[in-house]
Length: 224
Ligand SMILES: Cc1ncc(CO)c(N)n1
Image (cartoon, rainbow, N blue to C red; front, side, top):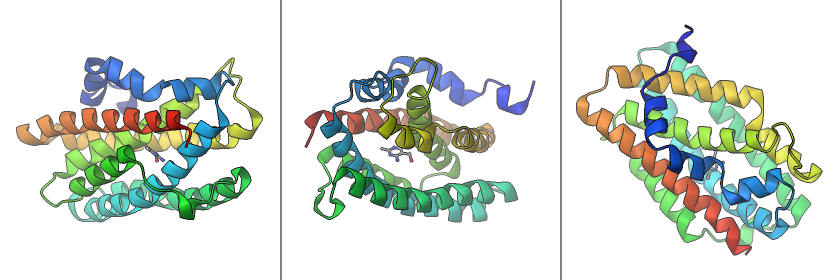
């Protein structure tokens, strides 16, 4: 079996927390994009909040990059994370052009509670006390939820509105899927050598990422 096909600990955790994983990757908002019933004010709310999220995610990924350079022992880890950081650069530009397309003025968007809590969680993960294997597991989960969610909106039989295809492609494309698999392989490798404490913490952090992602999607209901 190929390394990427082997069922590792992350898949075991995903199976164990299957309903939470489904809540994060098949949220009503995502399903409504796929079936075409999405409320555009929900989409705009999500867009503004996610723009703010991404601005806070950049320093988190930069921290992962520094740790990948220092702690991984594998030169390729840094390259994978650098690729992620590079795509965040494009992503910020994309958000700005979507903002003007939809008439969302980011300078007036205020982070909602779920967004603030998610940012605080990311900041806590940037502490040097948190082990690399735990950080990598969180990083994978954050990216994988978006990949799975938006790929669903592009899957067979979708009725995704044409004007939202670009958003779905951003995270649902095959390159992003491959990138998520690379991050997953790094996390798996680190977890194989992790201490018992780090291993327990990694599962806990994975669950908390999924909870934050559900709460994040929930903000779109406000239609603010
Ligand atoms: C809330 C959230 N989670 C994950 C991603 C993926 O980068 C994102 N842009 N926003």
